[in-house]
Length: 302
Image 1 (tube, rainbow, N blue to C red):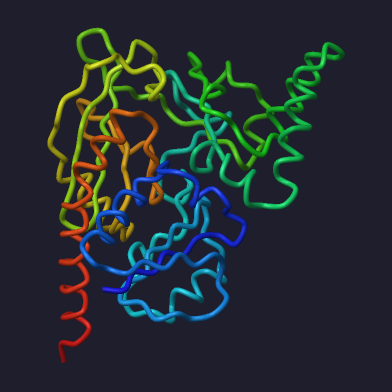
Image 2 (cartoon, one colour):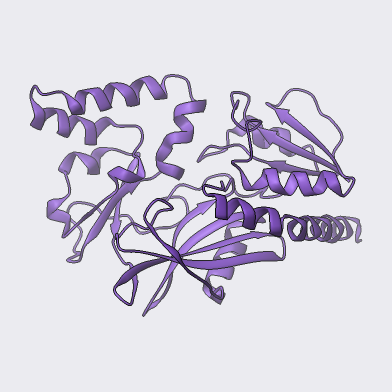
């Protein structure tokens, strides 16, 4: 099988180490005898039995979609925009009738940091906003300007507020930020987040815990995790957005599951995660082979 991987023309990090889950999948695919070609940008048209877009942006550029349209088998073909707004998450305005706690975060995937690497001028703007915010002069004005104009928001700046009234008013005017209801999953005095990783019909879903309301790899309770099932509602969500490969973060509330984030370019952030990715990679390659065979049969069917 010939596997093509499409990355952004300015992406210089993909070839550096094993940060991405896809690296483990490609390594296992090569060991099985499949060929892999990494395509940086949309020049040329090499042959491929399956194309895997790994364009690390929230919104895949149109020229990359046009390039992918030349190939019959493409993972995540229909998943072009993974912003919070595009995926249907509830976004609150300053005058909405909502009385509970809220969270302020980036509309863009991973806080908009991939855009800093790949979109010209975005990093300079972010650095200017950060320096302005840290200025000892006119602190109140600088903080307001940061929330109004910042192009990104690191997870360390994600904030939970007791109500909409407590959110900086300038944040509502920044299209790269969203304010959403804060509806956590809590168990045994801890906050929980479930992560579902999959390729085709191969999957792994686990639940991690933290004492902090925003659960991250850096603040998870060590050795406290468990395998959990995937609710039908989350499976339906995956089918609805046309996602074949990646990771979905969600919580389970008394009223049902709530999707928090979608990532078609999942990374591996810890050594434990890397060992798990290496162990599961052959199963993901099995699933990729099945997906290619099934899709090929569907195309060939009269």
